Length: 122
Image (tube, rainbow, N blue to C red; front, side, top):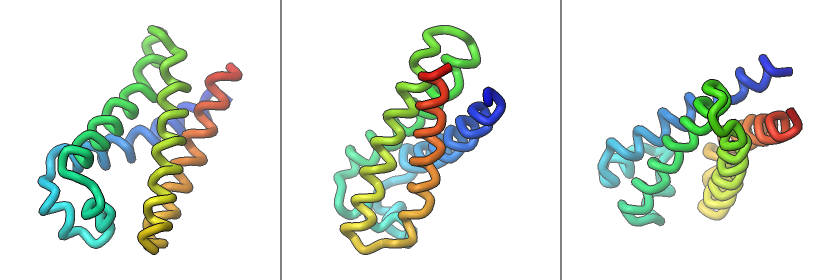
C-alpha cells in the first residue's frame, strides 16, 4: 500500500509542480493563448500566480514531509488541499463548458483523495 501511495503522490506532485510552475513563470496574456487555459480569462493575473504558487507548494508538501519524516501530517493535508483545488477546477471547467479540462482534474482528485485517505489511515 505504501508503494501505491508514493506512486500516486509522485504522479500528482509532478503534474501540479509542472502546472503551477507554468502559471508562475508565464504571463497571463501568454497563458490565454493556450486553448486549454481559457479559464485564466476569469481570474486576475495575481490570482493565477497565487494558484500556481499554491500548486507548487502543495506538490512539495505531497512529497517532502513524508519522505523526510518531518511533520508527516503535512502530506495528507496537502493532499486534502489538492482535493479542494481539483473540485474547484472541475466546477470552473463545468461552468465554462470546457469538458476537456474535467478528466485531468478528476484524475488529480482521485489521486489526491487516495493519498489523503491512505496517509491519514497509515
